[in-house]
Length: 186
Image (cartoon, rainbow, N blue to C red; front, side, top):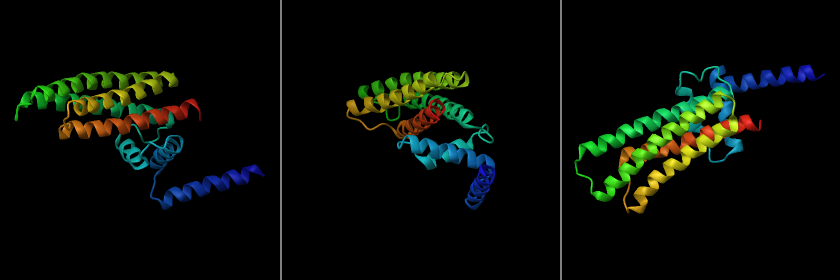
């Protein structure tokens, strides 16, 4: 009797996905993001779906693959943030004062460290060492918060590129941590 119930459930889920315009790959991303949101309310479901669906490795990926995608996206964002900070420091227009320069230098270092943290999250998750992967993603979240905190301590607002990259980094770190946590306790 359980076989027809399972078949009915599969048909119902496929119909629901079709009604929402989700392909098989999109449905997997949506399901994983939904589970991540249900396990950690800090996850922004719409951000999770939109950003993971942009990545070339997402179609057909399971939660393990999507945790690695989130870590890879984090690496890419952190690298781009380093480039943005370097451009701000090199441009010098207007020349940043000592407080702004110090905050930018701090962020530059922290974003380098964040690249390593997300890269470590990817490597540990890939090796199926989920607890270490989750910790590395959580470390990335902590690093970005220290960057924005450096501007706050200086009594300054971060420049737009830093604010944008930082907001993104916080979100992708939360997504990466939450999806990796699903692998630890499914």
